Each structure stands twice: as structure tokens, then as C-alpha cells.
Length: 257
Ligand code: F6R
Image (cartoon, rainbow, N blue to C red; front, top):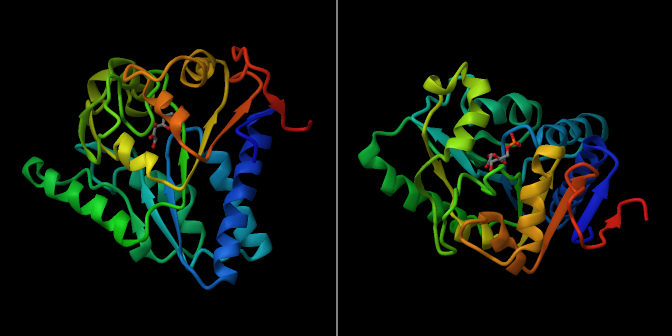
């Protein structure tokens, strides 16, 4: 995949990402090796997961050797709640593929607050023990957040409890029936956790993301634009639809070119 790929619509972009992930999963299977995927939630990856489920069902791609680590979870949040990222992942992906339950890792939003620091240290250790993340899938928030790393955020941040930005709370409120019911905190991988992934694929769809995507790609690296840290990663791909890419001034290669 090229560093910035622009597709006509999010369906095409999602399929390209799914094919890329499927290729990695298949290659590792042939090598009899595990593969570690870092996964995102939200509206952005839904089409990617749909296509991965289709590839599993129609083309027999197995996920038995796949280990997953999700980026984040709201806090407080019961995993069984329909608003949890745990529920989201099972609903959109895990319930439909053959990934072993013990290979799935999602931050636990139901912990007592005083247990969170030890949990976060354990999450970092589990990623390392699994061999590190091979491919991290990301979306981007309107604040420029990746995971729930809201601005300002430092490059050396790791998995921890964070406060959500008011814009992020406003964006999430539609899934919670109003701002007063929306969590204000989350457990998230840090910028350093994300940057240690060997490969990063970040997707963005629609006009609401165009302004922040331009900043993340074209502005100087800045703690006020968390996704700008990705500029220093050796293997990052932006997968965008035309609307999300609309404000980029650099010439980007069209996916069909
Ligand atoms: C989700 C996550 C967030 C989202 C971002 C975009 O696990 O970490 O960074 O990727 O908020 O959300 P959507 O895709 O709903 O626009």
C-alpha cells in the first residue's frame, strides 16, 4: 500500500484495508506463525470488519493464529453493555470469525479505579509478550486523537486512564442518548504503544475529518495534534475517501492511478 491512498468511497477503501490485513493473516498462517493485530472501534473500521468476515466465510481465511489488542475502552463501562467497545468488537468481528477467545484483549472498563494502573502495565506487557503489534488499525477523531489520546499528548505516553475531550464526548453522545449519559474517561493505549506497531494503517472517511487529516499529515508534529506523531513512523499508510482527502495540498496518488 502507498503512504496515502485515496478511494472514491469508504467501501472501496475499507475493502483495500481488509485485503491488506487478510494477506498478512494468510501469509503468517502459511509460515505457521502467529500475527498480532491492533484494532480500533468507531464508525471508521466497520466496513473493514464486514469485509474480513466475508473473506473468512467465503474464502475460508482462518483467524485461529491471530492475537488482537484493542486500542481503547470507555471508563466506566461494563463489557456486556451494548455501548462498550467490547460489545462492538464481538458484534462486528469476533462473533463471526474463528479467533480464539483467549487471544482477544480489550481494555477492561469495569475495573475499580485503583486497579487500573496495574491493568495498564499488564496490557503493555501482554503486547510485548505476544511479540509486539504487527499491524495497528486506526481511525482519527476530530480532535486529532488516535486511540483516545487527546491533545495535548506526549510521544512517550503508554496505556492509561485518560479524560475525553469535549468534542469527543459530543461525537460519542449520539450513541449514549445524550451528553449527560456519555462517559468522560477511557482506558487507551498511548502514543508510544501505537508507534511501536511495526505497521500502521489509519483510515478516514467523510468531510468531517478533512481538516484534521490535513493537519495530521501536513502540519508540524505537535502534541496538540496527536495523529501528527505518525509522521515519524517508518511504515504508516493513510487510507482516505475523496472527501476526507479534500483539503490535502500535497499531491496524493489516487488508488486507481
Ligand atoms: C476507536 C478509537 C478512536 C476512533 C476515532 C474515530 O477505538 O480509538 O480513535 O478511531 O474517534 O471515530 P469514528 O470512526 O467513529 O469517526
